[in-house]
Every structure is written in structure tokens, then in C-alpha cells.
Image 1 (cartoon, helix red, strand yellow):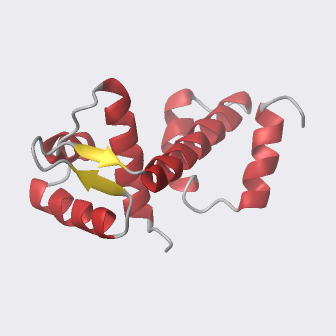
Image 2: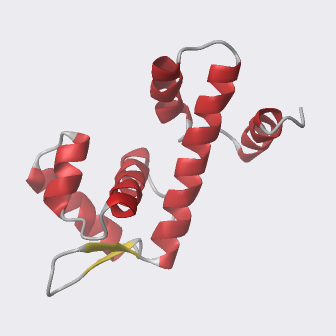
Length: 123
């Protein structure tokens, strides 16, 4: 099952929030993305149905499944690598991060591999 850009944004946000605090709730995601709680609740239901997250019944904590964590880590890696690439090429960190946020969803595996090589100094 492929995941849409918005789903990737949710997973990346949950991943980053869970690195700072293991008790991630829907309201945390809503605040981080500046979305309404009902919108986040709908998105979380879709992510859960597709096996990316679980929600602990006792605590309502959002927990990434192995599939969700792997997907989120890949998205985050693309974001960080693309940001570094643009910074290395003279773009301000703020603009580079903003552009990377859009590019991380559409970059082909071949192009990303090359960008990663360049950032690692093997380009």
C-alpha cells in the first residue's frame, strides 16, 4: 500500500514527537502540524487501518508499528539529506528545510541515492 504525502507528514511528525516523548497523543500531532484534532483523528484512523500505527487503549498513546517506524525513518532520512544537500549548495538552512519538506515526497530512489552520495562526500 502506498502512502500519500499527508500520511508521510503524519508519520514523520509522530516519529519526531516520539523521539522527544514516548507518550504521543493526537493533540500533540495536531499542534505540531497546526491541524484540527478531528482532522488528525481521521488521519490516524487511516494510518492504523493500514498498519502504520497502533493506539494504546489504556493511554491513547500513538505507537508506530515496525512498518510505520521504517516508513517514518525513511521519510526523515530523505528530509535531512535533501536539506543538507541544499545547504551545501548555498541555500539557507531555513529555505533548504522548507524545500526539502516538499521534495522528500516525490524524489525518485535513483535521484535520492545520488543526493545521498554527494552529501556523504562520495559525489
